[in-house]
Amino acid sequence: MAYEPYVSPDYYLTVYGGSTVPEEELQKALRKACRHIDSLTYNRIVGRGFSTLTGFQQELIQEVVCQQVDFEYENADMIDTVLQNYSINGVAMQFGGSWNVIVGKGVAMKADTYALLCQTGLCCRLAR
Figure 1 (cartoon, rainbow, N blue to C red):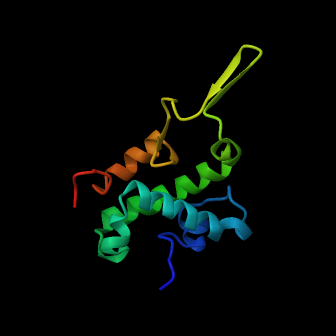
Figure 2 (figure 1 turned 135 degrees about the vertical axis):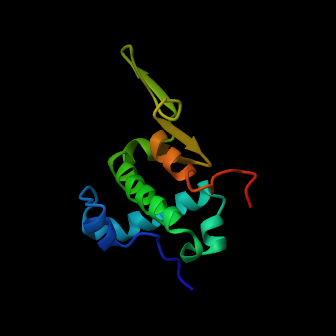
Figure 3 (figure 1 turned 30 degrees about the vertical axis):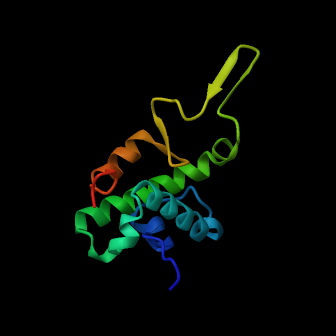
């Protein structure tokens, strides 16, 4: 059975109102973002099945997927770099240690988006 993202391109474009990712790249971006969310939720969504989650959890996950797709697309160059920080002529930049970006399990995500994902109850290491 093929992996299906939790958000369809149609949902991203019409319900969420996304316009950041070009349509020809959208399916791949959605799949990647969903895989990242699976990592952050310890694959609980895959294990339980998206359709068995509560409506509240499903809605939050879909919102997070859309936000993550936009974030990953807009910041692809920085996310894909192997550098954590650099400095040129006294101007420094650091990725991953910022107050508004978390990096967990190799996934970079805006802190407020991660907080939204945590509301599903699927991010706790101790949960089953």
